[in-house]
Amino acid sequence: MWKMNNSIKKELIKYFLLFSIVILSILWIFQFISFRSFYKDQRKKDLQQVAKKIEKNQSSSNFYETINTLALDKSVCIEIDNSNYYQVYNSTYFGKGCSTSKEETYKYKFDFINSNQKEKTYEQRNQKDQTDTMIVALRLDSNHFIFISTSVEPTESITALILKQLVVITILIVILSLFLASIISNHLSKPIKEMNENAKKLAKKDFTSPIKNTSKILELSELSSTLQYAQKELSKTEDLRRDLMANVSHDLKTPLTMIKANAEICKDLHQGNKEKTEQDMNTIISEVDRLTILVNDILTLSKMESMTEELKIEKIDLKTMINEIIKRYSILEETEKYTFNCIYPKEKLIISADKKRLEQVLYNLINNAINYTGEDNKVTIKVTNKDNIKVEIIDTGKGIKEKDIPYIWDKYYKNQKKHKRNLVGTGLGLSIVKKILEEHHFPYGVKSKSNKGTTFYFEIPKEKEK
Image 1 (cartoon, one colour):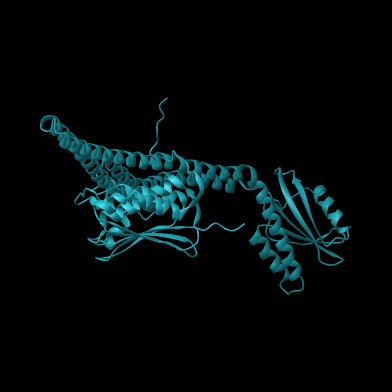
Image 2 (spheres, one colour; image 1 turned 45 degrees about the horizontal axis):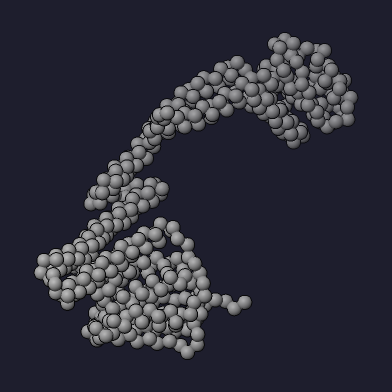
């Protein structure tokens, strides 16, 4: 089932209109449902304020003038009666809500004058114009009473005016919503479209086109920065992939060529010559062994990267393990005059690790030292036991440039510019070392000085005593 994806512009317009409808609905509901109650509460407050001002100014010389001013300002009717229900004074303002029937007037006046209350509010239905009137009664003294009244029905003119305003506001809000949605969507969609185009170029392996970070919006700026980082890393990965393929192809091609050449020589030239045939067979076996190591290293690295094998942690005697590994290089000591110098502390070094994997780490680091040590063919394995157990493999070669150190753990990094056929190993050793040590959570690193050699090291945390 196909699903249509709306653009940012359409989505923003939809949500802006929805927001506008909610706001407008609240305004219209307030107008037709809550406005009358709100108006009534406001008029009651107006009457109470007038009552307080009258009470405050009842002793002033311009008392009646104050009453007329208040009546006009607040559009209320003010009447002063005595205890005999006789009207002493009536304000000059006479508006809607001031006139009620004598019978209705008599009821609330009689009730208040005969009560002991200081102030009281009444509501009456005006039979003349069928409107509701609110009256606030106030006792000035024992013989004088003030009755302040007003209509609590919004006038038709006010209602019509508010209705017109709501219509105008509704139209303006809808237009403004559409306008703002269009402006904001254009502002948002432009950098997103640019990033989308850049992402498509990355998918097509175009890592040269610049990705600009021009957006002032935090999330879009972060997304652009992420794309820039992805471009840089993908470009680096692509370069490494090409070099890896070239180097692996070289390492596969060389032994295959040697195998074929020696097989042909053995077949065509050395038939019947037992010594030469044996020499050819030994060369073929050596190259097959080299090919097997390369394939195994590639498979090992692939397994570790896919996390298909779990570590098998066990107790290991580290010194015994190193000695057994060094014995494998006895042929190099005899034929190539290599020297392997082992420096250990006196005490036993029992650690917890995956034995097979840790052997691979030591084997690969020693292979690396063999390939790159100096003319003295000297390799040192040093173990110290302080805060942690530290293992160092030291060569006497030309060293590693400081700028290259962060990348030496990458596959074939050392051989990117000029491939070197290693004496032992395949060029994948350091990548395998990195993976295994990270799986064990063992800290590792490298120190190097120009023309003074290189030291690879890793640390094994000591087990806490129970």
